[in-house]
Length: 401
Image (tube, rainbow, N blue to C red; front, side, top):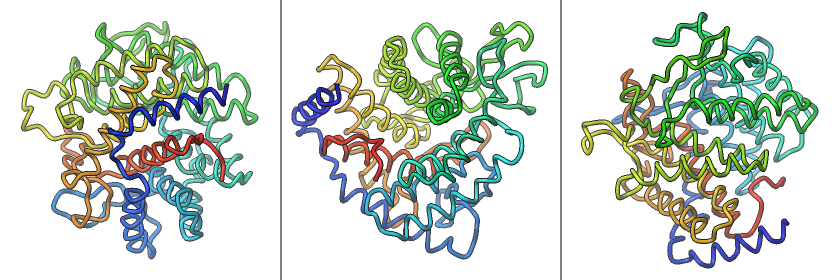
Protein backbone atom coordinates (compact mmCIF):
# COMPACT_ATOMS: atom_id res chain seq x y z
CA UNK A 1 0.00 0.00 0.00
CA UNK A 2 2.82 2.38 0.89
CA UNK A 3 4.64 1.61 -2.39
CA UNK A 4 1.43 2.22 -4.33
CA UNK A 5 0.97 5.58 -2.60
CA UNK A 6 4.55 6.59 -3.42
CA UNK A 7 4.07 5.61 -7.05
CA UNK A 8 0.89 7.69 -7.20
CA UNK A 9 2.70 10.66 -5.69
CA UNK A 10 5.51 10.35 -8.22
CA UNK A 11 3.06 10.28 -11.11
CA UNK A 12 1.15 13.18 -9.63
CA UNK A 13 4.24 15.33 -9.30
CA UNK A 14 5.64 14.45 -12.72
CA UNK A 15 2.30 15.28 -14.28
CA UNK A 16 2.29 18.66 -12.54
CA UNK A 17 5.84 19.84 -13.23
CA UNK A 18 4.65 22.83 -15.20
CA UNK A 19 2.63 24.09 -12.25
CA UNK A 20 5.18 23.25 -9.55
CA UNK A 21 6.82 26.64 -9.83
CA UNK A 22 7.58 27.07 -6.13
CA UNK A 23 11.28 26.51 -5.47
CA UNK A 24 10.82 24.83 -2.13
CA UNK A 25 14.40 24.84 -0.88
CA UNK A 26 15.08 28.49 -1.66
CA UNK A 27 11.69 29.53 -0.27
CA UNK A 28 12.31 27.53 2.90
CA UNK A 29 15.70 29.23 3.22
CA UNK A 30 13.88 32.56 2.96
CA UNK A 31 11.66 31.48 5.86
CA UNK A 32 14.70 30.56 7.95
CA UNK A 33 16.35 33.91 7.26
CA UNK A 34 13.22 35.68 8.46
CA UNK A 35 12.92 33.40 11.50
CA UNK A 36 16.57 34.05 12.35
CA UNK A 37 15.82 37.76 12.59
CA UNK A 38 12.82 37.13 14.84
CA UNK A 39 14.87 34.76 17.00
CA UNK A 40 17.69 37.26 17.38
CA UNK A 41 15.28 40.01 18.41
CA UNK A 42 13.56 37.74 20.94
CA UNK A 43 16.67 36.27 22.60
CA UNK A 44 16.46 38.47 25.68
CA UNK A 45 12.80 37.67 26.38
CA UNK A 46 10.50 34.75 27.00
CA UNK A 47 7.67 36.34 25.03
CA UNK A 48 6.20 34.56 22.01
CA UNK A 49 5.66 36.42 18.70
CA UNK A 50 2.06 36.64 17.53
CA UNK A 51 1.56 39.41 14.95
CA UNK A 52 2.99 42.53 13.34
CA UNK A 53 0.61 45.39 12.61
CA UNK A 54 0.69 46.99 9.15
CA UNK A 55 3.30 49.75 9.08
CA UNK A 56 5.18 48.29 12.06
CA UNK A 57 8.33 46.18 12.15
CA UNK A 58 7.88 44.98 15.71
CA UNK A 59 6.24 41.74 16.79
CA UNK A 60 3.36 41.95 19.22
CA UNK A 61 4.24 39.20 21.71
CA UNK A 62 2.17 37.08 24.07
CA UNK A 63 2.67 34.64 26.93
CA UNK A 64 2.24 30.87 26.90
CA UNK A 65 -1.53 30.99 27.56
CA UNK A 66 -2.37 32.79 24.31
CA UNK A 67 -4.05 30.49 21.79
CA UNK A 68 -1.33 31.22 19.22
CA UNK A 69 1.59 30.32 21.52
CA UNK A 70 2.34 26.97 19.85
CA UNK A 71 2.95 28.28 16.36
CA UNK A 72 6.33 29.94 16.96
CA UNK A 73 7.93 26.85 18.55
CA UNK A 74 6.31 24.83 15.76
CA UNK A 75 8.01 27.03 13.17
CA UNK A 76 11.33 26.49 14.95
CA UNK A 77 10.84 22.72 14.83
CA UNK A 78 10.09 22.92 11.10
CA UNK A 79 13.23 25.02 10.63
CA UNK A 80 15.25 22.34 12.44
CA UNK A 81 13.64 19.63 10.34
CA UNK A 82 14.64 21.44 7.15
CA UNK A 83 18.32 22.16 7.79
CA UNK A 84 19.21 20.19 10.96
CA UNK A 85 21.19 23.06 12.52
CA UNK A 86 21.39 22.68 16.32
CA UNK A 87 20.42 26.33 16.94
CA UNK A 88 16.89 25.63 15.71
CA UNK A 89 16.50 22.57 17.92
CA UNK A 90 17.77 24.48 20.95
CA UNK A 91 15.36 27.35 20.32
CA UNK A 92 12.45 24.99 19.58
CA UNK A 93 13.06 23.14 22.84
CA UNK A 94 13.24 26.39 24.79
CA UNK A 95 10.00 27.81 23.44
CA UNK A 96 8.19 24.47 23.61
CA UNK A 97 9.01 24.14 27.30
CA UNK A 98 7.45 27.54 27.97
CA UNK A 99 4.10 25.95 27.18
CA UNK A 100 4.38 22.95 29.49
CA UNK A 101 2.57 24.67 32.41
CA UNK A 102 -0.61 24.52 30.31
CA UNK A 103 -1.11 20.93 31.48
CA UNK A 104 -0.86 21.87 35.16
CA UNK A 105 -4.31 23.47 35.26
CA UNK A 106 -7.73 22.77 33.77
CA UNK A 107 -8.20 23.48 30.08
CA UNK A 108 -9.42 27.03 29.60
CA UNK A 109 -10.58 26.22 26.06
CA UNK A 110 -10.03 23.87 23.12
CA UNK A 111 -6.87 25.61 21.92
CA UNK A 112 -4.58 23.36 23.94
CA UNK A 113 -4.33 21.31 20.73
CA UNK A 114 -3.01 24.27 18.75
CA UNK A 115 -0.71 25.18 21.60
CA UNK A 116 0.87 21.83 22.41
CA UNK A 117 0.45 19.67 19.31
CA UNK A 118 2.12 22.26 17.07
CA UNK A 119 4.99 22.62 19.55
CA UNK A 120 5.51 19.47 21.62
CA UNK A 121 3.89 17.36 18.91
CA UNK A 122 6.51 18.32 16.37
CA UNK A 123 9.15 18.01 19.08
CA UNK A 124 8.15 14.42 19.80
CA UNK A 125 7.96 13.52 16.12
CA UNK A 126 11.46 14.83 15.45
CA UNK A 127 13.25 13.76 18.64
CA UNK A 128 11.25 10.93 20.21
CA UNK A 129 11.84 12.55 23.62
CA UNK A 130 9.46 10.95 26.14
CA UNK A 131 9.10 14.31 27.90
CA UNK A 132 7.05 15.58 24.94
CA UNK A 133 5.05 12.37 24.87
CA UNK A 134 4.05 12.77 28.51
CA UNK A 135 3.08 16.41 28.02
CA UNK A 136 0.97 15.54 24.99
CA UNK A 137 -0.86 12.76 26.81
CA UNK A 138 -1.65 15.10 29.68
CA UNK A 139 -2.79 17.76 27.20
CA UNK A 140 -5.14 15.27 25.52
CA UNK A 141 -6.63 14.33 28.88
CA UNK A 142 -7.14 18.02 29.60
CA UNK A 143 -8.83 18.59 26.24
CA UNK A 144 -11.04 15.56 26.83
CA UNK A 145 -12.53 17.18 29.94
CA UNK A 146 -14.30 19.64 27.62
CA UNK A 147 -16.11 16.84 25.79
CA UNK A 148 -19.88 16.77 26.27
CA UNK A 149 -21.22 13.26 25.65
CA UNK A 150 -24.80 14.47 25.30
CA UNK A 151 -23.84 16.83 22.47
CA UNK A 152 -21.00 14.72 21.11
CA UNK A 153 -18.50 17.57 20.67
CA UNK A 154 -15.79 19.35 22.60
CA UNK A 155 -16.73 22.64 24.23
CA UNK A 156 -14.75 25.41 22.57
CA UNK A 157 -15.27 28.39 24.85
CA UNK A 158 -16.01 27.71 28.53
CA UNK A 159 -16.36 31.44 29.09
CA UNK A 160 -18.52 34.40 28.17
CA UNK A 161 -18.47 35.11 24.43
CA UNK A 162 -21.21 37.17 22.74
CA UNK A 163 -24.04 35.03 21.40
CA UNK A 164 -23.08 31.65 22.86
CA UNK A 165 -25.01 31.83 26.16
CA UNK A 166 -22.41 29.97 28.18
CA UNK A 167 -22.72 28.26 30.67
CA UNK A 168 -26.37 27.58 29.81
CA UNK A 169 -25.43 26.45 26.31
CA UNK A 170 -22.65 24.34 24.77
CA UNK A 171 -20.67 25.90 21.91
CA UNK A 172 -18.38 24.45 19.25
CA UNK A 173 -16.36 26.48 16.76
CA UNK A 174 -14.93 25.29 13.45
CA UNK A 175 -11.35 25.92 14.63
CA UNK A 176 -11.87 23.04 17.06
CA UNK A 177 -11.54 20.52 14.22
CA UNK A 178 -7.76 21.06 14.21
CA UNK A 179 -7.42 20.14 17.88
CA UNK A 180 -8.79 16.65 17.20
CA UNK A 181 -5.34 15.68 15.92
CA UNK A 182 -4.07 15.76 19.50
CA UNK A 183 -6.77 13.27 20.55
CA UNK A 184 -6.03 10.96 17.62
CA UNK A 185 -2.32 11.05 18.42
CA UNK A 186 -2.89 10.37 22.11
CA UNK A 187 -5.20 7.43 21.38
CA UNK A 188 -2.28 5.73 19.59
CA UNK A 189 0.31 6.54 22.25
CA UNK A 190 -1.25 5.26 25.45
CA UNK A 191 -4.29 7.49 25.87
CA UNK A 192 -6.83 4.86 24.94
CA UNK A 193 -9.68 4.40 22.48
CA UNK A 194 -11.97 6.80 24.34
CA UNK A 195 -9.96 9.70 22.91
CA UNK A 196 -10.28 8.32 19.39
CA UNK A 197 -14.03 7.93 19.89
CA UNK A 198 -14.36 11.51 21.14
CA UNK A 199 -12.52 12.83 18.08
CA UNK A 200 -14.67 10.81 15.68
CA UNK A 201 -17.86 11.89 17.44
CA UNK A 202 -16.82 15.53 17.32
CA UNK A 203 -16.05 15.32 13.60
CA UNK A 204 -19.31 13.51 12.85
CA UNK A 205 -21.56 15.85 14.85
CA UNK A 206 -19.79 18.89 13.40
CA UNK A 207 -20.24 17.49 9.89
CA UNK A 208 -23.96 17.13 10.54
CA UNK A 209 -24.62 20.47 12.23
CA UNK A 210 -22.00 23.04 11.30
CA UNK A 211 -22.50 23.23 7.53
CA UNK A 212 -25.14 24.68 5.27
CA UNK A 213 -26.62 22.72 2.33
CA UNK A 214 -23.93 24.18 0.02
CA UNK A 215 -21.15 22.94 2.39
CA UNK A 216 -20.11 26.38 3.59
CA UNK A 217 -19.53 26.43 7.32
CA UNK A 218 -20.88 28.26 10.31
CA UNK A 219 -18.12 29.55 12.55
CA UNK A 220 -20.01 28.63 15.74
CA UNK A 221 -22.83 26.25 16.58
CA UNK A 222 -24.68 26.63 19.87
CA UNK A 223 -26.21 23.46 21.35
CA UNK A 224 -28.67 22.75 24.13
CA UNK A 225 -26.43 21.38 26.86
CA UNK A 226 -29.14 19.15 28.33
CA UNK A 227 -30.56 17.60 25.14
CA UNK A 228 -27.59 17.90 22.79
CA UNK A 229 -29.75 19.44 20.07
CA UNK A 230 -28.50 22.21 17.80
CA UNK A 231 -30.01 25.60 18.62
CA UNK A 232 -28.41 27.86 16.00
CA UNK A 233 -25.39 28.55 13.84
CA UNK A 234 -23.70 31.94 14.20
CA UNK A 235 -20.44 33.72 13.51
CA UNK A 236 -17.93 35.34 15.81
CA UNK A 237 -15.14 36.30 13.43
CA UNK A 238 -16.96 36.27 10.07
CA UNK A 239 -18.98 38.96 8.30
CA UNK A 240 -22.39 37.54 9.23
CA UNK A 241 -24.05 34.41 10.54
CA UNK A 242 -24.77 33.33 6.97
CA UNK A 243 -21.42 34.18 5.40
CA UNK A 244 -18.42 31.98 4.60
CA UNK A 245 -15.56 33.16 6.80
CA UNK A 246 -12.42 32.21 4.88
CA UNK A 247 -10.29 30.84 7.69
CA UNK A 248 -13.22 28.91 9.16
CA UNK A 249 -13.69 27.10 5.84
CA UNK A 250 -9.92 26.52 5.71
CA UNK A 251 -10.06 24.90 9.16
CA UNK A 252 -12.79 22.61 7.83
CA UNK A 253 -10.70 21.60 4.80
CA UNK A 254 -7.65 20.89 6.93
CA UNK A 255 -9.63 19.25 9.71
CA UNK A 256 -11.58 16.75 7.62
CA UNK A 257 -8.51 15.86 5.58
CA UNK A 258 -6.73 15.06 8.86
CA UNK A 259 -9.71 13.10 10.21
CA UNK A 260 -9.71 10.94 7.09
CA UNK A 261 -5.97 10.32 7.52
CA UNK A 262 -6.56 9.12 11.07
CA UNK A 263 -9.72 7.06 10.48
CA UNK A 264 -9.65 6.03 6.80
CA UNK A 265 -13.42 6.49 6.92
CA UNK A 266 -14.61 7.32 3.39
CA UNK A 267 -17.33 9.64 4.74
CA UNK A 268 -14.69 12.07 5.90
CA UNK A 269 -12.74 11.98 2.63
CA UNK A 270 -15.92 12.66 0.66
CA UNK A 271 -16.80 15.50 2.99
CA UNK A 272 -13.31 17.01 2.84
CA UNK A 273 -13.73 17.28 -0.92
CA UNK A 274 -17.15 18.90 -0.64
CA UNK A 275 -15.97 21.63 1.75
CA UNK A 276 -12.88 22.12 -0.40
CA UNK A 277 -14.73 22.44 -3.69
CA UNK A 278 -17.04 25.25 -2.53
CA UNK A 279 -14.01 27.17 -1.23
CA UNK A 280 -12.13 26.76 -4.51
CA UNK A 281 -15.15 27.78 -6.57
CA UNK A 282 -15.40 31.12 -4.79
CA UNK A 283 -11.72 32.13 -4.74
CA UNK A 284 -10.48 35.28 -6.48
CA UNK A 285 -8.13 34.90 -9.43
CA UNK A 286 -4.91 34.90 -7.39
CA UNK A 287 -6.32 32.17 -5.05
CA UNK A 288 -5.76 34.23 -1.88
CA UNK A 289 -9.20 34.68 -0.31
CA UNK A 290 -10.75 37.81 1.03
CA UNK A 291 -11.17 37.50 4.80
CA UNK A 292 -14.83 36.58 4.26
CA UNK A 293 -16.17 35.43 0.89
CA UNK A 294 -19.40 37.39 1.40
CA UNK A 295 -18.08 40.76 2.52
CA UNK A 296 -19.96 43.31 0.35
CA UNK A 297 -16.83 45.50 0.37
CA UNK A 298 -15.05 43.06 -2.00
CA UNK A 299 -12.77 43.85 -3.87
CA UNK A 300 -11.81 46.52 -1.32
CA UNK A 301 -12.01 44.04 1.56
CA UNK A 302 -8.80 42.76 3.19
CA UNK A 303 -7.33 39.41 2.17
CA UNK A 304 -6.40 36.54 4.49
CA UNK A 305 -3.08 34.93 3.62
CA UNK A 306 -3.42 32.71 6.70
CA UNK A 307 -6.47 30.98 5.21
CA UNK A 308 -4.55 30.42 1.99
CA UNK A 309 -1.60 28.90 3.85
CA UNK A 310 -3.84 26.55 5.88
CA UNK A 311 -5.66 25.47 2.73
CA UNK A 312 -2.49 24.96 0.68
CA UNK A 313 -1.08 22.62 3.31
CA UNK A 314 -4.36 20.71 3.53
CA UNK A 315 -4.75 20.38 -0.24
CA UNK A 316 -1.31 18.88 -0.64
CA UNK A 317 -2.27 16.14 1.78
CA UNK A 318 -5.77 15.76 0.36
CA UNK A 319 -4.29 15.24 -3.11
CA UNK A 320 -2.54 12.11 -1.84
CA UNK A 321 -5.77 10.55 -0.57
CA UNK A 322 -8.02 11.15 -3.57
CA UNK A 323 -7.89 8.20 -5.97
CA UNK A 324 -9.36 10.02 -8.97
CA UNK A 325 -6.21 11.14 -10.80
CA UNK A 326 -7.72 14.26 -12.38
CA UNK A 327 -9.18 15.48 -9.09
CA UNK A 328 -6.01 14.64 -7.19
CA UNK A 329 -3.95 16.62 -9.70
CA UNK A 330 -6.37 19.53 -9.48
CA UNK A 331 -5.98 19.76 -5.70
CA UNK A 332 -2.21 19.48 -5.98
CA UNK A 333 -2.01 22.15 -8.68
CA UNK A 334 -4.24 24.51 -6.72
CA UNK A 335 -2.05 24.11 -3.65
CA UNK A 336 1.09 24.87 -5.64
CA UNK A 337 -0.58 27.89 -7.24
CA UNK A 338 -1.56 29.16 -3.77
CA UNK A 339 2.03 28.77 -2.54
CA UNK A 340 3.28 30.50 -5.69
CA UNK A 341 1.02 33.47 -4.96
CA UNK A 342 2.01 33.54 -1.28
CA UNK A 343 5.68 33.45 -2.30
CA UNK A 344 5.33 36.49 -4.54
CA UNK A 345 6.48 40.02 -3.78
CA UNK A 346 2.88 40.95 -2.96
CA UNK A 347 2.51 38.49 -0.08
CA UNK A 348 5.98 37.74 1.27
CA UNK A 349 7.10 40.12 4.01
CA UNK A 350 10.75 40.26 2.85
CA UNK A 351 12.20 43.59 4.04
CA UNK A 352 8.88 44.96 5.29
CA UNK A 353 9.20 43.08 8.61
CA UNK A 354 10.61 39.82 10.04
CA UNK A 355 7.54 37.65 9.41
CA UNK A 356 7.21 35.35 6.41
CA UNK A 357 3.94 36.74 5.04
CA UNK A 358 1.89 39.91 4.83
CA UNK A 359 -1.88 40.44 4.45
CA UNK A 360 -3.53 38.14 6.96
CA UNK A 361 -6.71 39.01 8.83
CA UNK A 362 -7.29 37.83 12.38
CA UNK A 363 -10.58 39.17 13.80
CA UNK A 364 -12.01 41.86 11.54
CA UNK A 365 -15.35 42.34 13.34
CA UNK A 366 -13.37 43.08 16.50
CA UNK A 367 -10.87 45.29 14.69
CA UNK A 368 -8.00 42.93 15.52
CA UNK A 369 -4.99 42.09 13.31
CA UNK A 370 -6.41 43.35 10.02
CA UNK A 371 -4.05 43.15 7.03
CA UNK A 372 -1.29 42.07 9.40
CA UNK A 373 1.51 39.54 9.55
CA UNK A 374 0.29 36.74 11.83
CA UNK A 375 2.27 33.85 13.24
CA UNK A 376 -0.17 31.09 12.28
CA UNK A 377 0.00 32.18 8.63
CA UNK A 378 3.76 31.68 8.82
CA UNK A 379 3.37 28.30 10.54
CA UNK A 380 1.08 26.82 7.89
CA UNK A 381 3.12 28.40 5.10
CA UNK A 382 6.36 26.70 6.19
CA UNK A 383 4.40 23.49 6.83
CA UNK A 384 2.98 23.58 3.31
CA UNK A 385 6.43 24.19 1.83
CA UNK A 386 7.81 21.19 3.72
CA UNK A 387 4.88 19.07 2.54
CA UNK A 388 5.58 20.06 -1.06
CA UNK A 389 9.29 19.36 -0.71
CA UNK A 390 8.62 15.91 0.71
CA UNK A 391 6.05 15.12 -1.98
CA UNK A 392 8.65 15.97 -4.61
CA UNK A 393 11.07 13.63 -2.84
CA UNK A 394 8.41 10.89 -2.39
CA UNK A 395 8.76 11.00 1.40
CA UNK A 396 6.16 10.89 4.13
CA UNK A 397 5.50 14.23 5.78
CA UNK A 398 5.24 12.50 9.15
CA UNK A 399 8.60 10.74 9.09
CA UNK A 400 11.04 11.12 11.96
CA UNK A 401 14.52 12.58 11.56
